[in-house]
Amino acid sequence: MRIAVIAVGRLKQGPERELAERYFERFDEAGRKLGFRELAIHELPESRARDTATRMAEEAAAISAHIPEKSVLVALDERGQNLDSTVFARHLGRWRDEGAGHTIFMIGGADGLSPELRRKAKLAIAFGSATWPHQMVRVMLLEQLYRAATILAGHPYHRA
Image 1: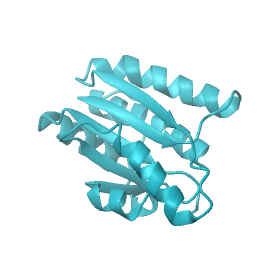
Image 2: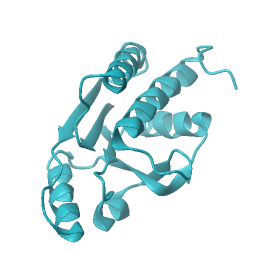
Image 3: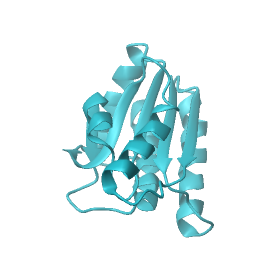
């Protein structure tokens, strides 16, 4: 299964980017042994439209252009479910075992994801009830992907 993170906004040089790269590399190494063939990150520019509805529509179109057919879509959204790491790992392992070709994690811009993309998502997850900057969400997602791989591999990284 291939995994992609499609994120509106870019990570600039600095600690967030370094941490994201660290978890990306860790997942890439651990994930290949578990049948996760690829982890890709697609950074999309934020829309410059003046009104919220137009910005969300433009960003949704940009995100949609990167989604292969028959993908499992996961929305990162503050209204999503709060999953513990073991449940998150089970979802990922189940989709892999069911033969999903792609699992796509979508991170919206400042206005969030469009209602249309949220409706298409098989799962919406949140990292608590707080609103997080997209840079932090990406780092937390990459860490959870790595943690899921270690849980699926029976590695002691996850100690809960």
